[in-house]
Length: 290
Length: 304
Image (tube, each protein chain N blue to C red):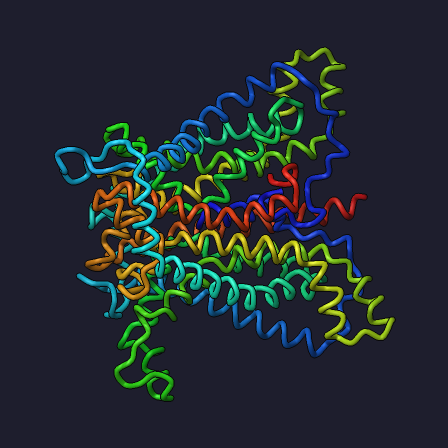
């Protein structure tokens, strides 16, 4: 996923709001055409995903291009190709570190932007916006050439530095919406009950912001985990999972790489579907009780 | 609003407390802002400085000294002018195809499926599903699907669309297909966000005033969803123009499909840092023109 696209993900409310139920369009035939067109488009979009998952079960031996029969070996022995597992654990390490730092820095900025006035506000906004509007290859070659100019050895640490950089803006965007919709009377109630400012923050504000912060952290991890374009410029000899795939592409990807990608895909889909279903159930409960 | 500034979708600020002025704001902002100055602004400055460097005295590979060598830009434009045109051509075509596929899809999810919230959520998940599988692996899957001995090429050769010695991989077709495929969700989501908020009573009113289906679309639905279309186009065009994976020869491209990102990448790893930096700066400036136009129109408060 590119950083630009994440901007949409950060903001798009995936949960539809059912209250605006007007009579849906009258062009019945038109709706059918649009529906069939959409279903075909979606099915085509799913083909490469299906291909990747199917070939994780390929009895491939050396090159995973031709189908040679079904096997579970790749799933059972993921670490047969040690570079797959090594790069995968590097990616987890980079993703978790970058997510932790970026989430803290971004949440602080989001609170400041919604709650406070300050000078140079426009400049700060532009500074947060520009990394999202810059092509990733420019972000990567910029940081890369800075590291070269400084004469420092690149490695996992410089990948983490880069990932924190492009995550911060998305954390701000995601958490900002949550801060803005926070009802200030809840914090007021805390103060009325003689809570100190610190207590109000840790026991009222932060827990209420948690869904937004969690969404931001997940988004940042997903961005970091799949980033190749920027990572390539700042990684030196270190290898993340996408970089491993890129390097291996020249001579053939081991099926174990498909296993990792498929497992991550299935896990992510399960998380999203469960989140959607439980949000839907909650909406229905609220609708019933009101 | 995230980049998209989809009309009227910003968070409702009426509930929030009035903004105060306090030293706390400084404490909250400082770490993140300093971090971005050090890792985003400083590298951009470094990139500009690098783009003017000239070879060092002993002419060792990768050794450059600070200078004002404008010729780097002349060389970049002279040598890679055609590649720039191809980059913007491919990206523009990918943006148009993504729009043609995304608009009906977004309409289907945002309007037709409105009465079925559960289906709406599940189809949206299908739209973003490609995000969850490795970008590089799904691009390699496309390469395998379009392989020379594959079913797609075989079928096209059988019907005569492709000659017996013509293939798909490595051509402009596969690169543009890959760019379109990889960035479609960025087009669909903002358009969906606009259409999902479309008040259908406007469409009904148009019908009551004897507007036909075509008139209702061109004069009501499309103008109301235009903010989503514009942000979707930017969100597709920007990453597509900087992409160097789809066009690289290990993936969907060949030497005849080289894009600006490939040039930046290859020059960087061959240690031709100044030229790589000059191409990066040219690419960024070219991208910033539509972005600045967009920002000027939407205002800075709506940027995030």
